[in-house]
Length: 91
Image (cartoon, rainbow, N blue to C red):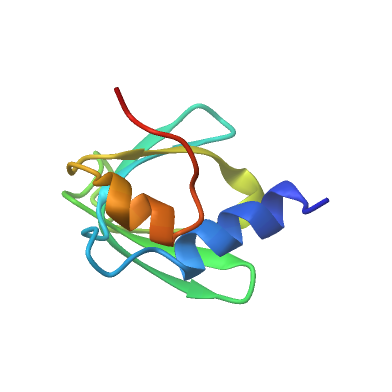
């Protein structure tokens, strides 16, 4: 069984090209981070926020084990998700 870190790393490393690299990330501290792009390096994620936070920071660097959930902002198509390994059907 994969660890949470490995699962999230796989999600970001294999993010389908047809889905924009933007969304909302909720971390394990229950902070929501809106992002418009990301990069990965080893076990780290670097997010480009959609706008700076109150302190003026634009980029957020965190480890994969700090990711709790990701919310997609764009419409997802079953055909894209199935090629990514998802099974089932939307209503």
